[in-house]
Length: 461
Image (cartoon, rainbow, N blue to C red):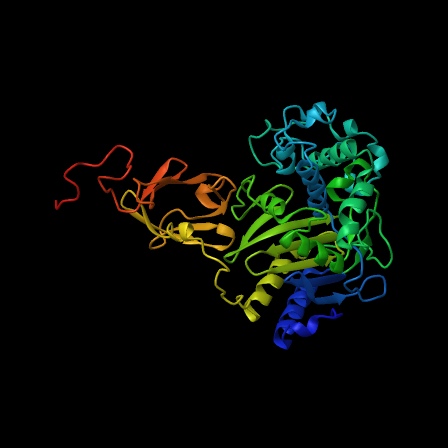
């Protein structure tokens, strides 16, 4: 095992459990090497490796090919374009790029794999053959580029992300790899992430299914398909990327945009009911824990990165084998093991620095019809609405300059909460939440209850 400088932050029992999981993954998965890493609160706190590659033990600085983890990097570039106002996610791709094969598909649909585009490029297996065989974007599509109507269903598409890379090139006027280095890798300090391998790097291998022997895999430059799966990276660099995915970095993307990317944009496909897809981000539910990130594979390599926002943890797993170990499970288990051995210590409770009397007057019980809710005041004039007893819709709300609030999550995400004045005593009359009326008493006759209240009021049956 090659530990990071910060490994001492984890308890010995935690470190041994993490190493055990990596060792089991390497042994049972029959992979020449497997590297694992844990990120906590934005810092790399543990790395471990088993096996060897090209005569040396790998460490957090050894490059592995990360396959479709590349897609999340490409998605970050697209979201930067959106945040700068150069495109809208609802734009048809063809508004910005000559791509008749994707006619009708929007930028958001390409990001979420709901564009209907074919999964793979035609011709010989693109992951094992030179990109020169497909020199233009038109060469990425066969006679039937669309296999589903745009927006109808989730269908994973490597060709769709190749088009997103071409979109980045068109709007930036530079090669995808150059834009990525300038706008993402350099600001995040990811000096060991690149489209081509840089020593020290692992060699890619296939393992015979019925014998413990190896076959080297080619490492081709995939050309126009690069935005879908070309990158090489290290556990240390991916730890920096995981920290970015957790909290954002204003030099690249803010936290609000990253939160948007991990919102479900497409449901799981087929019998897989345990995941889904955001905007260039895979989603998973493992043992009650919500994870986001991506997995990847290329001939000779497997990669996975999962982030748990609730635990403030990320797990990374890299292997140099075409198939075998479930690196997605290894990375998820690294998060779980750390969280179980060393649950996060809550931040100390502190009172708000100030309390606006008008906001305090809003707090307490409110009623939607006969259903009781509690409204709480949070930091930065934010509000939180939750049902009494736990059954019902809840949401957090962000204060807006015009005196309203916008829902941040749950059923009321994006909806507007307004305070409607009362009858002159200065107290708030009722709340209007996306046309739902919440009053201070359940169905009080004098309140603004839609449909009115029976004049005889509450009575026994």
